[in-house]
Length: 530
Image 1 (tube, one colour):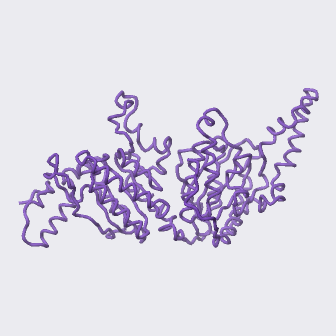
Image 2 (cartoon, one colour; image 1 turned 30 degrees about the vertical axis):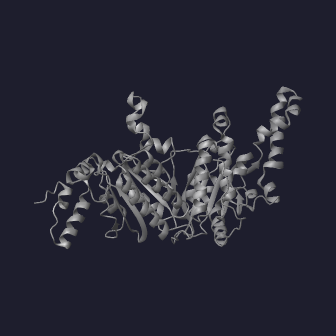
Image 3 (cartoon, helix red, strand yellow; image 1 turned 180 degrees about the vertical axis):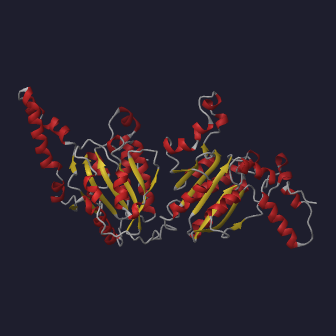
């Protein structure tokens, strides 16, 4: 009699009936590392691999492949623990009716560790996703490379990494990290376009916490080293943090709703009852009269886009810039905006990297870019200069200049110096640039410019008169250089618009730019300053 708690007992004695034997083998594969191991996982608040795939995909849509793959290792008595599937469930199905390929690591089998056949099985699925031009969803929950397989495990993992890199920019790749993921598997997860971590159990480590001196000495725990909050706020790996596994699957579904199936397809269209003629009267008073007072750029975005729906990404990382997806007149847009609430919206190292990667993602998948600009410049200081703000700031400029999708820019207040150039200016072939009447476009702020240009003139008058002279010169500088109509006269702005017309103008511009096609000289790829 077969022991239900031992999945290997289903393979012990052939029945002689091919159909019965097939069913037994499928049941063995379904049990993974056994009922006890699966129940222990569920008791810890986590789902099994098949539980997670069931939550992710449409009901009854999953078609499993490579069910009977097993490891090839005979050392360490591994032949006594042969498990069908080798610790990962792979296949394809649908999400909201759209075809996807997906896999989920099975923590009940060797702790979800990646052996040779485990990795090759995933690599085969990744290659199939690229061939069929369908999105790929990866569910990671495993303890790195399997020591029993030795170098064979690394060879299989290398093949997997190569396949993932080939997918980049061709199909959307999304990773869910719902358990501890260690070593090269963490690198694989970070190759995705979007990496979502579970708040309670999601962890990513390149080096095992057991081998990390700070953990050994009690200075930090495993969550502090590689937990979800750390990767969402410090490392910038997690674009979103899910409350639980069901929420993680929902976030995948939401992100996919904005993305095309592949790089030669258009993003999905979602009809909205929000009219393009809706005026944004709240924007008339949103920007403070005092140019040094902050306001929330997210409110500007939500007021302009369809139904006020804005899916912000990396909300706790480089908060001085916002990125995410929204829609205008039913069509997906990628939003990039300075956030005056944090560091006055200055660009720093992390903000430049965060925005540059998102811009390249949108360009790869034919998603128009809409930039909401209020930037006083790059953040000054020794830390930024020594950290390479020049190189990292150049990434942002490079990404905008390289992008061939429609590029629209709305300047709400400040646009100063090199940051003005880096934020999708007209000189970088942005397609439609407009500004509110409150906007200032200049090399630097009027006060700073006057203190440099007219310092002798100011110092030449009596001390009690210097402030009056300075204020007069500031007003003259703003009228001569900072006024948005100066830029408009030179063709560097397509128009100066009322804030209430922002949605109308952007929707109309996006509609005409839908047919934009840009030719560039043949080359393998540019050399972005990484």
